[in-house]
Image 1: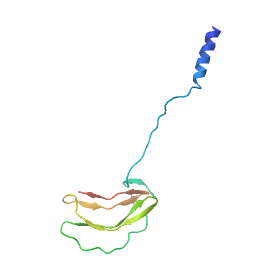
Image 2: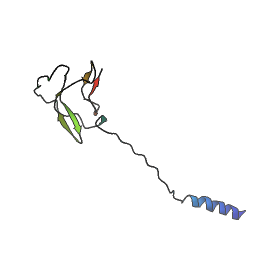
Image 3: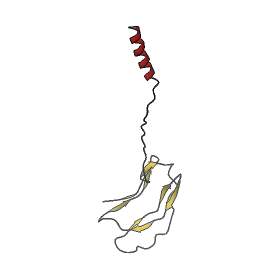
Image 4: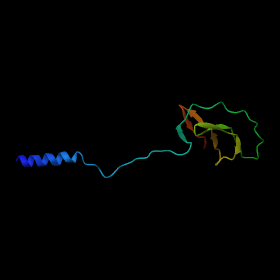
Length: 106
């Protein structure tokens, strides 16, 4: 009886020191400048000259600051054609230290 108990305790105790032969890893990330945590918003928009419209059907996109690693880069305003009829540009914005990309909306 003592031998069996000793063998069971020895077997159970030795399993506490056994090492596993596999690992599990999880990677989490996000891409682009779409949505992420950035430093406080940059300086106010730069005042710039708006060139004449290149033709009918174009919409003016005001310049805006774009996150570029730890800093911000100024993206100058430009004329663009909306991707579909009655679309309008929603400017990029900063809310709660988060940057939200600009996009076309119906």
